Length: 127
Image 1 (cartoon, helix red, strand yellow):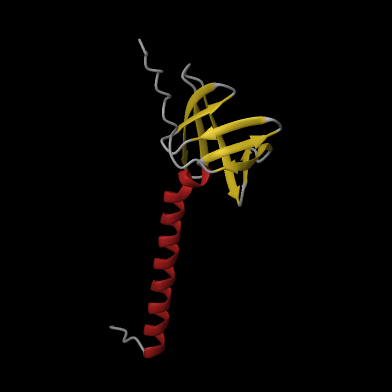
Image 2: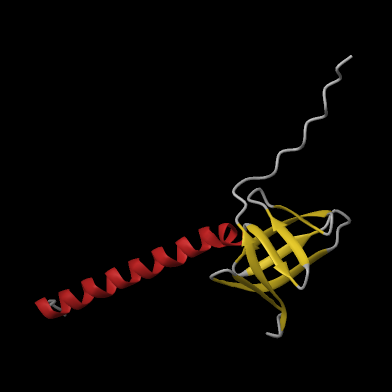
């Protein structure tokens, strides 16, 4: 038996489809913005961490690479050590948590870093 949609059912169906489309768009936009929300200079208890747009970072004079996926923040050190944390960004606050939900660190954003720093050029010889 073929069911004919009444105008009310058509309206409800259309509203549900629009809601699903809106939700999927918001979810995909959030995923794209994960990394950009983390780019910047962050401070916590005297520790400064710079996260650059190209996925590089520096803290305590040591460089590392980083990435963010599915609300997980990954730090990869050159010596092959790596760490993963859950994270949230609310305004200018970055909160890192362990898998068990325990808060590890809370950082405050002090600067946005739009692009990686350029390496300083050696001084030219004047001789």
